[in-house]
Image (cartoon, rainbow, N blue to C red; front, side, top):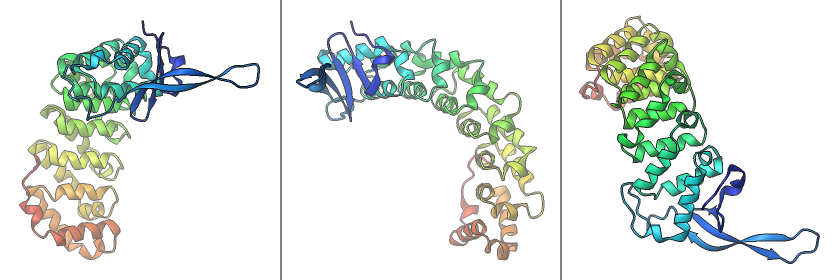
Length: 340
């Protein structure tokens, strides 16, 4: 039977009891050893390609995940490769070269083969979500398999939602869960964990703000409202923050009508606040969102026009004035995007 360990995966090579496979560009090649006549006490060998399987060839292999891909099961190299991968999982997923190999095979794998890979990750999901390599496999499975086959991912991650949101790789997995399994009960519980405690800190975090943006786009109305409410007490600071400003701008457009309007009023209520934001490298994106809100855009335009002489002297202020000039009246004509 096929056997593989992490130690044997250097140069992205899979070895079985009778053959070996190595990734070469977009192909998996079967290789054999060829002895070399060379002086010295130690014999030397080199690899010789005797067969290849084009694992990413759209012309020769079906791409649909739910396809049974008839005919491939008889391909010896393909069958041996898949068998070796399944035997090596989940350890293979945590190795850089090994994970690359699994991803290449998954590109043209059938639905059943993907389900076998998913099953091999059961019990290791939390480690995989924090791995720089294995998290890619979780995301691929979420994208190509249905909720019934991937619900175990959110289930195993429960209890660590907050930590996951602040992790470079875990935050990406959370965003994919929000995109493909928003209504799964375990996913909803994970998001509740993220929003418990200091939600503003999540919005200001390098990785957490990406999760906040995903919640505003794909989360439930109550979850979106929680984001908006948490921002209200920190609007001036958040609107100038490298990461949080993106969340404020998105909340203005995707929050519920009243939440969005309340947040917008908090931004513009202080005299000169809009002008100040328009001259700020991060705040200017908040001003662009304000200009798309019919109930508040008139006041924003009025302040920008009043302080046009100041704005034209600033790099970002000049950009926003040029946009207004090039699209005179266009902002008021825009349809509301879920905002006030």
